[in-house]
Length: 297
Image 1 (cartoon, rainbow, N blue to C red):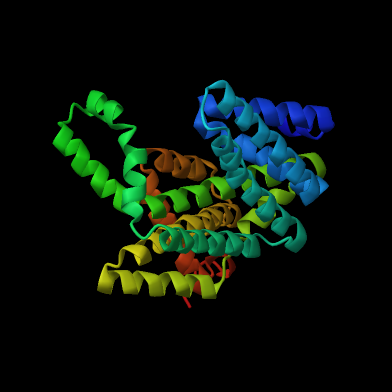
Image 2: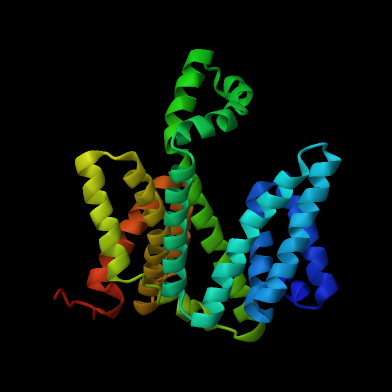
């Protein structure tokens, strides 16, 4: 088991962090396990140890960058940008013992990140266009599109990349922390994770902020506000997911309902994120988990 290997000792933890860093370069979705390793170490050993393994993973990227004749500092800084937030949110969860406060921190941090990026890059689309244009050959080959059509698509996507990137980072960070917390529970508190996950509730203030943002976006179609809403929806999706798990548990439903839910997320990811976030926001005010069966008030 990965968690057992990571916590078996410092050498094992270092081996896992380095190998998972290398593997995630070949298959990026596996970055969640690398993140989870850093988070697990932080949860169990403290933020100081989390920093040590963050530096180890970042140095690994630096070495890879040098080996590939790329800018060394870029790999190192990218590593710090990815893993330091994991140390911060894992520390927050360890200290507060509250998923709600931890997710609120993720929401605030991601929101601040979007605002700061726009402050530093007034023309955010111009920043993202060169990044997206690197994928132009793949788009041309895979979708058989003309250069003009690809350029048009890149221009459209570049407008929303800041919000999309921030929302994706929030999703990956929270998912990684969930994996780490589950690992911790399996090793040291069997069964403890499920109960705390099912109780996730971000609170009315966060929900109201997202609803106000949606209202402003509908009235003004302000791009910055829409990007901030994207972040809010990404975070509230986890409350919706926790609600689904809680209702299945409360009503003793077959776990096939959850399997179906995750299958739908795999097939219709964006739509399901929005749907779950919607139920998560509604749950903040209605509190479905405390309602008794048949109670409509």
